[in-house]
Every structure is written in structure tokens, then in C-alpha cells.
Image (cartoon, rainbow, N blue to C red; front, top):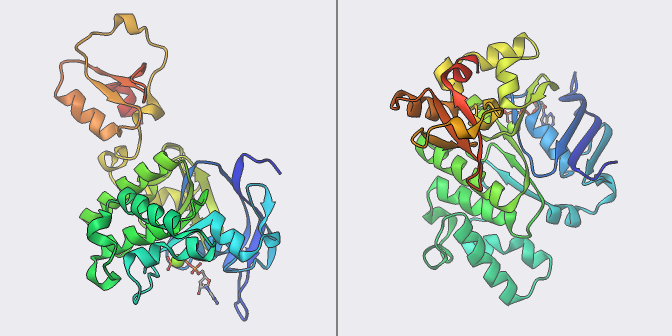
Length: 319
Ligand SMILES: Nc1ncnc2c1ncn2[C@@H]1O[C@H](COP(=O)(O)OP(=O)(O)OP(=O)(O)O)[C@@H](O)[C@H]1O
Ligand SMILES: [Mg+2]
């Protein structure tokens, strides 16, 4: 079993007692380390069931699950909880406990010292955008839904798990705060280099967040690929009807400059004044840049501010 995969499913099926058909059927998946993978599918298609077999909340009827090359059936639930963070829609926060007590749950189970736990609480609340001085002593009922989700996220990150499972964590959040939380989780994932498996039934969310997207229907994976590839080459009619329900302009929001840029360009021939952007910028934003500029291309730079290619209007049309 190769170590570069954070999560591997081999022939996983799950049939609940008295159920007529399996909720998850003969599923193989390989999730690379450090990837943000979203699972998209309609209600009841088996997303939660799939996720819960990774951290052993459910045992598969057949097949095997590996994390970092290790068979999870051989890892104790406590050790597994330390290695896999879990965030759900209703946050599962303990209502009678303050924010700091909630975040400290796993470190306390693991027997960390008081000082270390204290530092960790501050660090995590800072990370999820809740200033500790203001929020440590509050109870969940004194927080908005979005703030509760942030605490849920901080709690799941407490023991620094390398893998995070997130089951519709932003499902109950209004559109504006949802979009803010999406940007935050992207930032946190990049910063901490976590492997995230994130369930949603929102197409926009799945395509925006995922390095790769798993599309599920009736217990089976229909396609597992990058957002760009899924949009360009849907594997079957089910995927096509799902992702093409949005218009083109909408879809461009999920295609990143880095996905379509032309790398064989002579940077000497490009103008100093041409607009610049980053690999992670969406094509929609690049199009907006182009519309307001006399140039037909945008220079794309990487994180170190080095020039790595261009995106032209033609490339946007083809995407
Ligand atoms: N504990 C259980 N016992 C029996 N059947 C279950 C159990 N959990 C889920 N199921 C069934 O398995 C199927 C898949 O359920 P699952 O919760 O995985 O769907 P989902 O894709 O997460 O849906 P949603 O988007 O509504 O959360 C459903 O038909 C559901 O009724
Ligand atoms: Mg579910």
C-alpha cells in the first residue's frame, strides 16, 4: 500500500440491516495526501455512509479502508480520532460546555498538559477567526450558526489530525457566511496542508472547494476528477445533467487560471503593463480583468510571484 495516499477504499460496500440494496456499493477510491476532495450527490446517495466508514463510525459490509497505508480496522478508535478530525452540520458542540472546553475535548482525552491545551485553544480560535479573549468563555448558544461551525472546526483540528472528514459543515449557514467560511477553510487547508474529504450537495461548493470532486449517485461513484475535467468531460448523462445545470459564466468561477494557462510563452515578449493574476484566481475574475484592459492576455504568477504563463480570451472561451 503506497504511503502517498491519505485515504484508500478498496471494494467498500455497506448494506444496512433489513435494507433492500446497499447504501454504498463496491467503491474504490484513492485520496492523495494534502488534497481537498469534495463528495457531491443527492440526498440519500450514500455520502455520509461513505464518510463514516473512514473513521469507523460504520463498519463496511465488505472491503477495506486504509489511512496513510494502514488498515483502519487495526487502529483503535481513540488513535483514529486523533488522526482524523470530524466536522458535521449540527456541529455536535457540547451545549453545556464553553468554547474553550469544547475545543479542549480531544487534547484532554489524549492527556495533554494544561499549558499546552491552553496555548492550543488560543492558536486554534485565532486560526478560525474567533479572537480568544472574546470567545473562549462563551457557550454555544451565545454564538451564531457560523461561529458555532468555526468552533466545530477548531475542535476537530485540536489534535492536529492529518485527515479531516467534513459532512455538510456549512449546510445550515446563510449564503454570505457560507461563502466566507468556504474561503476560510480553503485558506486553512493550504496553510496546514490537511487532507480533507468534504461532503456537500451544493454543486457550487463542491466545484469551488475541491481539488478533485467525487460525484456519487445511488451508492456508486459516477466520476472522480478535477472540477475542470468534470465540467469538460462529464463521465455520463447523470454527471452532465448535474454540472451543466449552471450557465457558462457561473461555471467559470470554478475553473482556475492555473488549469488552462498557456505555459509556452516567451515572457520577454509580454508587456510590462499587461494585467497580472495568480494561478488560483478563477477564470471569471480573469475575464473581468481582461474586459477592463486593452490587452488580450493576463500574466499568471505563482505563489513566489514568478511568471508561469498566460491566459488569453481564447483559452477562456475553450474552458
Ligand atoms: N444507520 C442506518 N440504518 C439504516 N439505513 C441507513 C442508515 N444510515 C443511512 N441509511 C440509508 O442509507 C442510504 C444512504 O444514506 P446516507 O446518510 O449515506 O445519505 P447521504 O448521501 O449522506 O444523504 P444526505 O445528503 O441526505 O445527508 C439512505 O437510503 C439511508 O436511508
Ligand atoms: Mg448525509
